Length: 204
Image (cartoon, rainbow, N blue to C red; front, side, top):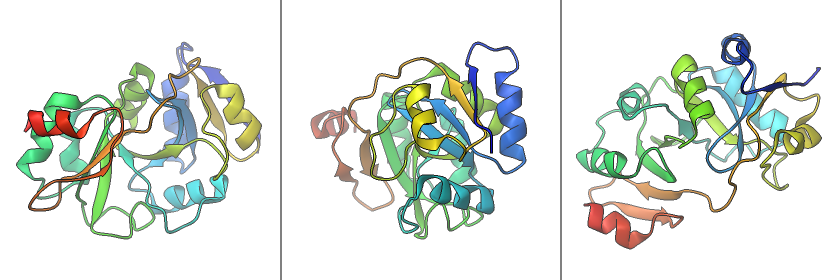
């Protein structure tokens, strides 16, 4: 497979990415943390191919990225009110909310009854997500290797494994998102990231 790098500024980049995604392919693109590797969230085979491209253990769930808070209903069900309180306060940004998942989502995304959902604070990522809909996205690297912050780093690791990398320059990198389980009667912080426990509590 030939891996192409296309600048995020190219006028046809989103339509090119959309064609690949709708055909079941994978696209790497910049986010507000590192470069992500994504497939359409409801395409089981495409999501499975993320594991293959990354040499990723199959038991690890893949987070879902969406463009806007309203898109949560597409991937979650019976979403607790606390989720929206946190979402309107911190999203787009480094917060992942764990919510009950739609039963139509493939097991390749999550074998459990929940999924992690986030809105990246990055215009290229959100433009792609608005065009494509919810995507299963994880860092665009071989599992166990460093997460890439440039398109060139993605190419070094995934060359020949994926068809397209959208080059949006260097991403901020840094700390992974704070993960909050909103599916329980009482919220639980699963991972503290840039948004502290104190900020979460004060928002509620």
